[in-house]
Image 1 (tube, one colour):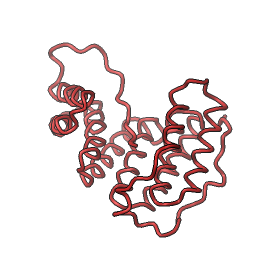
Image 2: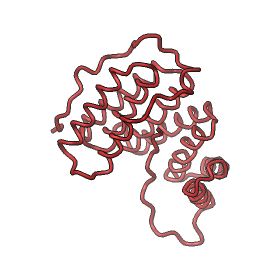
Image 3: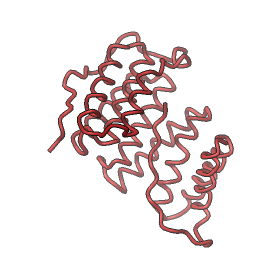
Length: 223
């Protein structure tokens, strides 16, 4: 499972759009076709071009494209670095609690988890979930994604009871606020049925849970 930070809506683009924007679009197109390594190369190029410009939106979208592709194609250290850059950009442009910033922070937590920084990953993702529920409500997509991703991290580290607790809260929240057939409800069910990652065992550093318990997790809408 992987969290992808949504790109900002873009206006209709003419042929004279900026080179970095064209490279971002090429990367997105290759990813849609399932050509992840080609998409990654385009994303690296887009990120390089965007960093040379004074256009915050392009820098943000280029980093948002590269970070998950770096993770998906095995460039784990680059994923961590790019997510950190993405979080900095999103925080500066949009604020600490904006949905795009929270998606970026969640992605960075997952990147840390992939390289065995499990305690940091889970603590950071729990903080993302707390901020998301307080700012956007527990039923918001970013809140549900953070909570279900937290379940995946717990499960990968061998803590099935904590993972089940997160899934139960997500299921209850979705059932309370979202209509039947909503894709987020389907996604939660799919995650509940997904086994732990076999690959994570080689890097996992958690012999016991050393992060805060989620006993205070709320399913109530914030006001």
